[in-house]
Length: 407
Image (tube, rainbow, N blue to C red; front, side, top):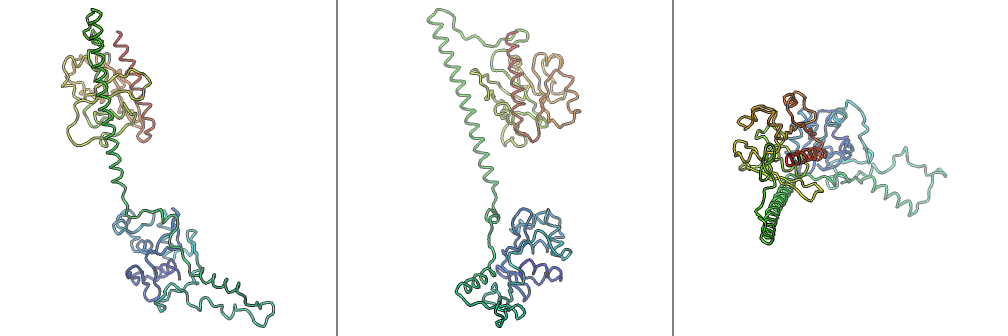
């Protein structure tokens, strides 16, 4: 009797309570004994053979909801039966069906007898099961049936006996399984290393910009001294009417958490072309007042740095002259106390963007469509499309800045 047939027999008879675990074995009353980890002949749709421990735990808990059963099995450290296998497996074990395509008997069930009377070698077949019966034994008087005993025949007989009691302990699928292994800590560690790397690169870029600015300032001063001209640094941006003011351009983002782009994830989106939800990116501690971003994936030699802020109330009059773009929330109250008459004046002087998921209802953008803003759509799941959306923001932003600088 093989483990699967024995378990099915006891399930049909309603004698599962007679199956007792003793150390690393399951005792089926006084009839059979099998290792707990013995693989049965029932193969999962995922490809691996179920162990006796898995099937016994399942048939005893089949009445429990699948999610609760998975949690209990994980707590016990027992591999669980998958959802697609539940119904056909239970029908077979309860005797509702007589066979299943998932069953692969490697050894005929009546070949091995695991009677506990053979206590020393319970897995070995009885000699009687390997000796041909009288009905099948060859007739020694028949000439055609007589075979001269040879060493080759003896070897074949020994090989058949060995193969009859063989059973696989591990297959390729079970060897690849990592039981009771949790890789969450590996994910957390790798994420922290990546964030630290990005922080260091960002700081290096800022330091490089400062050093370059100082170097250019010293060269201009030296050139002015030698030529007699006034070498006082002239502002690259000057506010006259709608021109950009002196200093680093500013991009405003909403401080509300329900918007897609915030001060927490704007750097990854604009610099790396990857959208990371705020609730994933947000870290503990004080929120930054300002974030510096650059267009990293540009072939241009001249790269402009931008400041990203989310507190318009903290801006001074000169700061408002440097505001070039705003990511809108889609609510009128976002522009409360802004130094402009209305949103028409705002979006004539400042470039507006509205970020949305492409499968969101159009109702969410109803108010925004009345404004002079660009609607940027991204996918909820297809992160490889984020780069295209970020490039569209950069293209419109750079064109807008050039037009304001020359107006």
